[in-house]
Length: 269
Ligand SMILES: O=C(O)c1cc(=O)[nH]c(=O)n1[C@@H]1O[C@H](COP(=O)(O)O)[C@@H](O)[C@H]1O
Figure 1 (cartoon, protein in one colour):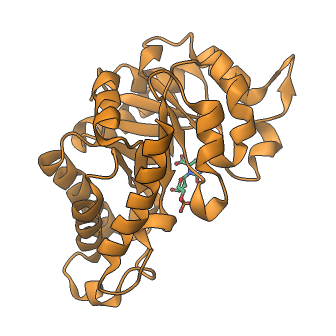
Figure 2 (figure 1 turned 180 degrees about the horizontal axis):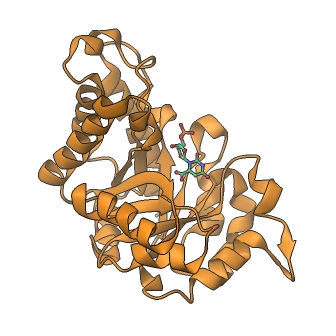
Figure 3 (figure 1 turned 30 degrees about the vertical axis):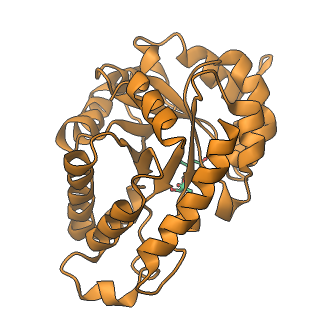
């Protein structure tokens, strides 16, 4: 999917919501555990109930890898279901990969070719030759971790090297990579006060912003400092939406939570 298609979908739905499909078998309604594939059954119900309220879904691969081959199959079925039924939805494989060049190429093939995700999250630590293999894929997006939502972000990301904090170096240096137009960045909603300076460096790039809801980030603050002319924001909520209820009404409860966020977003556009 192109960035222009994503922006047009945001304008049409008046939503820049990304729903995180972080499925934990201990948290889903018990009746689904009788299904052949409980993870896919859960995802399908959530997607069918919420697709008109969001523009993106982000399965975090950890939640699938934890269940071995069954988990990986559920992930494949989920992305195939999205691509077949809701091609207008932007899909994010939250895998946080990145390795030497030839290995990165194989990761890119796994997520962009085999599973046909629109984007994948990547750790920038190994630098240019670990990121550029992902950028080589046309109309696919590489979402680089810049300033993450967790407390550990202060261990390295905000430390100065020469003049700049490390996360600013990530933004500045990655802009010089080949096919840099395919870059997006992760900035945690818990770090909204950093967004104005981030926008000085990358005025138009899309930001994936996790950390609202369960982690305490605030939608209004993120938009105040982070919204760009092309909106430029995908705000993710995982637990706050998908675990709104553990009963048979779980999908409707998720849709209600998503609707609340969509209404707040429409007011900010
Ligand atoms: O890359 C991410 O998506 C990510 C980056 C970050 O800085 N913080 C962060 O929480 N995430 C992911 O975003 C999701 C947040 O989930 P909730 O806190 O349940 O909304 C999880 O899948 C995290 O792994």
